[in-house]
Amino acid sequence: KAGVTQTPRYLIKTRGQQVTLSCSPISGHRSVSWYQQTPGQGLQFLFEYFSETQRNKGNFPGRFSGRQFSNSRSEMNVSTLELGDSALYLCASSSPTGGETQYFGPGTRLLVL
Amino acid sequence: GEDVEQSLFLSVREGDSSVINCTYTDSSSTYLYWYKQEPGAGLQLLTYIFSNMDMKQDQRLTVLLNKKDKHLSLRIADTQTGDSAIYFCAVPPDTGRRALTFGSGTRLQVQP
Image (cartoon, rainbow over all chains, first blue to last red; front, side):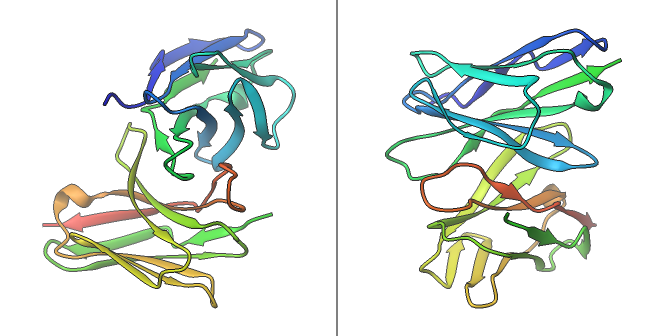
């Protein structure tokens, strides 16, 4: 079974721009969570989607948003990029029948100049 | 909220055992997790333990859980150079929620 895939893998943007990252979960998984990893703050939870509904949200500003489609694929969007948004963005999926265990993708590395 | 703490660095010789420790403040979740991250990569699920277990063994990996002290440890037997990576302890806030709280990660360096 294919793992979690994320596109693009690398991205360079400038301050003020917006960016959209994509995540395809493992086949059959309906929950998708997003995390931000930075050297300073470590790994932080952004939000979780299940059946196209946001179920949990971390402590991030409204510039960070997401959505989930009927095929469980998810996108996250960051508007008005700031230098501090440079990070590795990780997506994880989990199965409704497999407990809460989350399987992570390779991440999208975003650099904001 | 949940607070998860790990030591930052551990250095061992190849063939020795490695023990990575983690403490957490509060979790009523059914599961607690260990993830591994190699340079430039995402997180790889290593193992997890049910909260009603004290110990779980999975090949070279042994997880110990002390719920009273809120202490979790990961032991890697016969550590190899390929085990060099950052290891994260991850704790969900409660059952059914997938908002993992991660420790800062322990960088394991294995010397030949």
